[in-house]
Image (cartoon, rainbow, N blue to C red; front, side, top):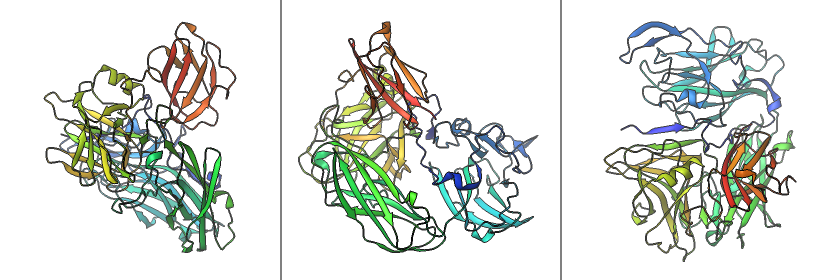
Length: 593
């Protein structure tokens, strides 16, 4: 049995194209390559061609380039080099030993930049992202640089990280002023068949002396330990109002300059339903070294009293005057949920709502997320799961609720995925499984998940994942002995404290009556109903259920084919709800920039 971690193809309706890699002041890159152009390798040295081999390792006498440009679908064409597709359809450079035309002799391959003149440059830094899992027989991945032709120095030996892009910021100030500077990326397949290595978004920039950067404002700390129980410290994108403890907010702070910053201070404000609370202030950081990054959390003592989307705003400062104050602020949000469809059926979620891949395969396993319950009295109604491409009709599943020690508290009934479920999956909608006993929850940590049960005829299950998962926050129990492993990304598996209707008729059905075109869309999408029925109103929702646009935003409703202006709406997967005399219809819209 081999588990497949499948990066999603562009045509799949469940992909979300939010890039986790946002370069501040991207126009400051004096050298850059995102590998999106027609001649992406112009000026780059791809090294000698490599020989293709048989599965037994025998040379075929055919030679091909070690480096190619492609997207996640190209990388994972054979199912062994599952590069996360973020953003959707993004292209990158790769040495791929796991798809045509290789299996190849890639014992030592290198991608080398053209000569770059650093005369007059100071505080130079490299920013890029790499995908390096080190799977199968893969050898090391190394970044090197040269200031004298033919002489190379190590810059970084890359850590192998499963299932996600690594975002690197590396100091190159030792090369300041060099007239003949080059950088290269080296990788080895270990002398045998391996997976691959990918690099993207290469940027060289000059750093300022004092540059504080604030990012990733959110509820809960992304890097909080799951072992500190008894409160609510972990990250949540959605949180039932009845389980919203006094809120902890957090943000990342980084010294992007070349000199230390002193007395670094972060403060935060929270806005919910038109009311602003705070500011809440963190303890100052006495010194933040150049290139250092920390997560700063603030226990606000504030507790929400009504459902709604809360905006979290962080601002930072230091003793030194910032040379680039435009990135001293960061914003994020959390949805406090309540009863009914508008309230999200009191959902608790720790994914970021931006699926970039899926996890699963055949065999038996339980995929779980850890949730913190802080107040007594709520009942666990069930679990919603957003399945991904590759999930098969007839797969046998059930929802599972476990305590912090993985003892079973409750399950749903066992059942096979039916055509109605597949319709939901094809439309990007989650499938709800109700717990049998709907147990009353007491304070403590729980694991909620979906179990893929073994059956005579093999059926695959894939669950979408989105957002970083810290150790023991998202896990999988595999096989008959339930071997425990951490997941690097968060499954879209959510706990509901209120039952979700078995069908989606309450807020519309994903039938063929609603058509969106073009889809995927970029600037404008038009909606049309069967028989040219009049659209009375419409809403554009994200995967967390938040309203992004609604009729009134674009004054074209009340027509048979209204248009929706998508300007300012990030790339990703959305739901369009249209109301007419025939009722409510739902369709999935993919926005691609």
